[in-house]
Amino acid sequence: MKKQMIGLLLAGGAVTSAHAQNSVTLYGLIDEGVNYTSNVNGHSAWEMSSGIVQGSRWGIKGGEDLGGGFKAVFRLENSFDVNTGRLNQGGREFGRQAYVGLSKDGVGTLTFGRQYDSLVEFLGPLTANGSWGGFIFDHPYGNDNTDNFFRLDNAVQFYSADLSGFQMSATYAFSNSAGQFSLNNAQSVGAGYSNGPLTVGIGYLNVNRGGANTVGAVTTDDAGFLAERQRVFGAGINYQLGKAMLGFVYTHSDMKNPTSFQYISGSIVPAGQAVSHLKFHNYEVAATYQVTPALLLGAMYYYTQGSLDASGGKSRPHWQTVGLMADYNLSKRTDVYIQGSYMKVNGSTGTALDHAYNPAADDSSSNDRQLMARIGIRHKF
Image (tube, rainbow, N blue to C red; front, side, top):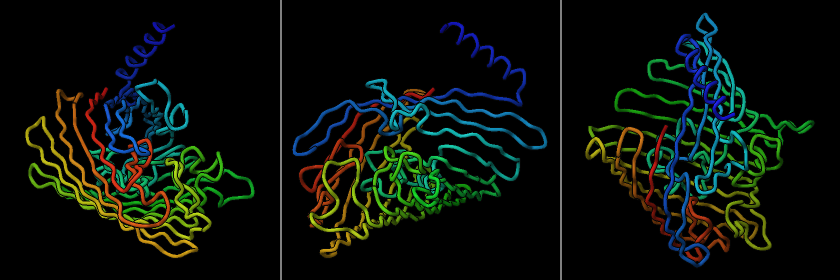
């Protein structure tokens, strides 16, 4: 059966070569390494961990020329854990992306399915966590989703063609709940401009009752924060200066009436109180330097000012994280890297927010500090 499948794929490749207007591409990436975390619930931890710099994946993408500048397009992208072979994203077969659509030369692409929101597409690549550094450099609790913390199900997205360096995108994700149109739906817009060494981006995301059910835009097993509303906006800039790249990103996140954050064991709500708003102002500066064609060095720092508006009063926690990375290419498709980050939290909310938590870690620290280090290998195919 396996030989038959390989034969069919090879035959398909031959057809693709003969008819260049149609194409199917199989691609993937494996990211594996060893993590050290200084404090996870009071204990240090060494562990094998997959998909930290980039999520381990394989996918199929393709298109069909329909004539007149029109093209049918699709993408199915899987995520998996190298250590166990299990599927990620709640066991979804194609949890990273799954969509089909139409594109028109000079106009853009309209797609339908499970997709990234528009803020992720334009702001994510300008951050350290969304480009060269990965999850270990993520903003507190992945609050702005620049790390693709969650995708949007039931999404319709328009992504414009490149117009002299300018592009934009708009996304709407349906609730799929009869009689409850606004229960767990989402809207997002973004835009970017790239010209020579300069790249800028802006984005906006609004999720209503994310995680409230299993059929909406952000399903229960995909959401981080459970809240009445999650609203994010931001802007960023990268500038290439010879071998160096300099970047700055600002994002603001507002969780209205949050009740929990699903990836830590502690509560983000003070005991016996209710929270009306949990806000994050994230300020990030980052830089990379291409020392040689094979060696890249990176550094980042972010400061996040928080605001927890509880029925018993307001508190203002803040987070600081510094990160470093060295990445060495063994070939065009294989690299090895070492990276580390250190987080410090200041604040007295009386909740789990007072404990440092790197989203790449298994859980929060037992105190206000958490150090993470990783050595890894990545192979692309």
